[in-house]
Image (tube, rainbow, N blue to C red):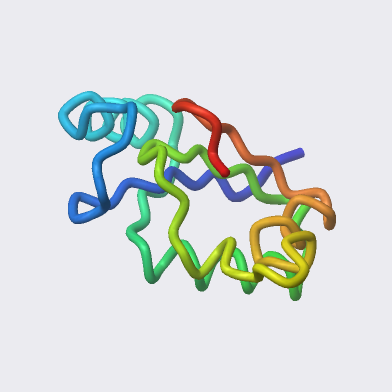
Length: 102
């Protein structure tokens, strides 16, 4: 069962396929109706690091912004060792609402 429901929305993030107005509305719906915690760039990085060091299976993250924060997927030598892929490998759930993320 998922105990930590996270929605990543960063007003300052680069624009992608999902319009920022739509993203903000979705983040508010997830927060108000489904008890998600909305986090920005730096908080998302910390949440994922904590999940990797704890029990990632207890986390579900919805990427309302459809641009991956660089720090989550910045391992060009071994992409499978990036923070995001380690989170997924440990059982964390990621929901992507935009175009192909990588």
